[in-house]
Image (cartoon, rainbow, N blue to C red; front, side, top):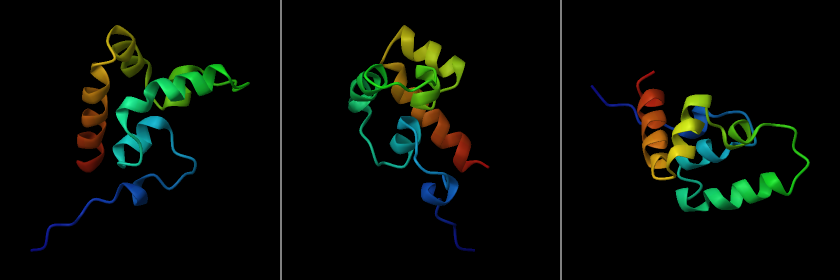
Length: 84
């Protein structure tokens, strides 16, 4: 039996992707988070920052506690998506 290869591009069919979705797909570096936060601050976007970044409330709370949690947030999302 051949193991199927997960393709994030098939999972995230809506465009544009959020920061988190781009990180999951390997399209963005985690280290670019501050650029996205600055872009949000400099825009007239009506979304909450957590929504703009693509985080749940709990994920955003973890991120606010420590930016180091961002790696765990993305890895957890990858694992949850691949398991579906």
